[in-house]
Amino acid sequence: MNPIDTNTNLRTSRSDTDSATRRSGQSNSSSSTNASVDSGPTESAESVSLTQAAADLLALENQLRALPSVDQDRVAEIRQSIEDGSYSVDPQRIVDNLLESERDLT
Image (cartoon, rainbow, N blue to C red; front, side, top):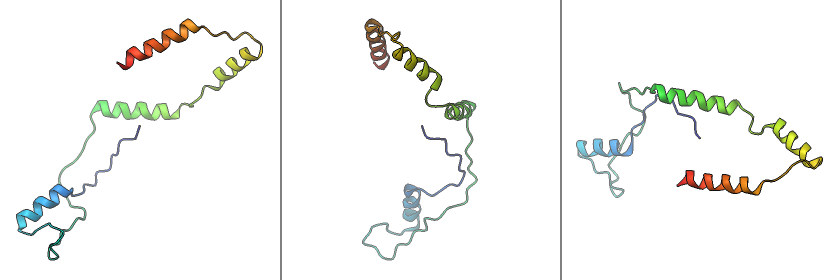
């Protein structure tokens, strides 16, 4: 998941530039060598603000990033149970969980 870009610098999009070019009477075709379009940043009174839900999601994402990707204690526990022979596989539980995952996807 990508973080939300809170950059407030606004750039002129191609469609905005094309519209401005048409209004000024200049051609935007590649065969025209006289047409010149300034594609630099423009000043604008527009602003962007995040909703509370978006801010909450961003905070949650940052909390998740701080968590370790692997629970080392759980790995050690499973490794130990495999080594001492007490680890058991329940095929019915595996099938049930696979079917539940499939239902969640559809």
